[in-house]
Image (cartoon, rainbow, N blue to C red):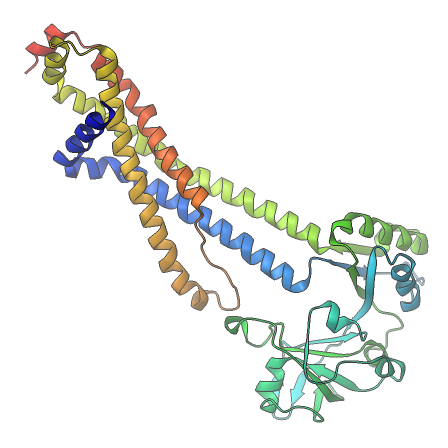
Length: 399
């Protein structure tokens, strides 16, 4: 009976193709929008995770503001990390140095210049491709040396920068190492993670006339202990300053969770808005099914006169409504996949430097299909019930 009912339902849809297409249009648009929005949310979440992974979700970022004349020395902050080796594996001061970067005849304005410790490159997952990294002797003697990113090496020195000089403002540094590329080719440009200069933080402090580092990067021994590590660091800083406004500790893993929740909330709101078109499509299905019942009143009378029960008539029209809606859902899923694939071809050129893509998931497709079929059943039930309750004698007299 189910096979015969489905066959007849699709036969009725096929016999009124143009009307069926118009009926399914709202469902198609709604399912397509839901697929694309859900895929965009999935792509944004994946891009966010990749971005945070490249920075390291096992890191704490500590900013020191000080309190009046009281500030924390580098030794005091390093001692906090050394006090709990079960929570922290490394601590590096971070000192930004401002100034125009000049590498021969090339001038760069977006290059990141940072004073760091000898451990910083490792904790940021950088790898030295040429020469050497920073060593403790560089920090101890405040040497005017630096390690540069792959972008600077290729752009300004043709890939052979070792031993040459690069200027940051009026200060000249000798290049002792080159970092391996860290970003994708689409993000390989000025201002990217490969457009950087790392120099001893002691030299950066002297050149910027600062007495202590304003920020620190802390590597966690166990990412799962991030809340406990953050709480311990904040407690130690409070012990030094006696004021919570004198410092700020940020956990990248917590930031990732917050960003992911925000993305999920925005995607949920957009999906709900897109779902309005599914409601409109359902109303359209109800309207067309009422018209169908009116057109087939005499057929219903004949079926009931031959012994068809109300349940069979009800089932017949509900299945037809569900088939129409499910077919629209299938077309919407296919269209959503095609639009997502097409958009992914143009996103790299429209958003350079962002590894963003639309990633429709099987769960979103399956949910959209089931919801579209459910809408057909829900909005087709009322016309089907009306058809099932028709008086057979009056139905046979209907022209």
